[in-house]
Length: 225
Ligand SMILES: [Zn+2]
Image 1: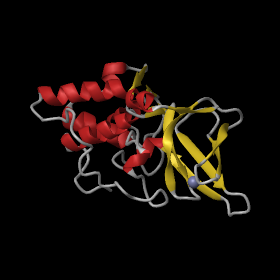
Image 2 (image 1 turned 60 degrees about the vertical axis):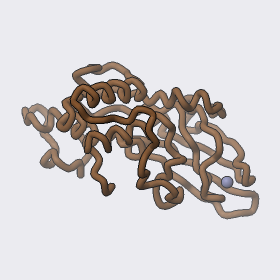
Image 3 (image 1 turned 45 degrees about the vertical axis):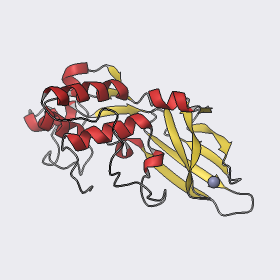
């Protein structure tokens, strides 16, 4: 199911739920873990990395249309899928959008768009990467700020809004000057096309606040990767 939501809902959402997945190895290529641990072998650094690897479950998102190469004007609630089929809707440009997830977790979404008689387009959203909720991001947050998500919330679920508030408080206590009511400043990705990157307009408000905190804490370098 996919359902349009209003701006009020978007301001308090995305209930990006984070759930630690202890024991799960980081995918290969995860830098900083020295090639991953071997099951049963106590490598402290890898274990720390694993503890901070999270499930990301996104229940509200903005959707890109590959035909007109813009983000749809509204945000959408992502209900569960049935065999990966989340649902369909129409873009104002007339294209028909069909959304597909991976059937068990809402951490990715593939959006097919096509206008009658036109060529098919595909846009893939990787929320973990778009929202900067990857193992490395969380590890750097802990290293730099001392705010350890896993220590705070164990294996439970927590909304990104809660995380933003807690990290904000932690930064304020440490003397950094966060972000209250500030603009999502110097969006390095602002204006980027859907096809080439993530435009700020593709990011929910709470995620933009998260990114701002990452910058304030100097977790995110001034120049993005
Ligand atoms: Zn469109």
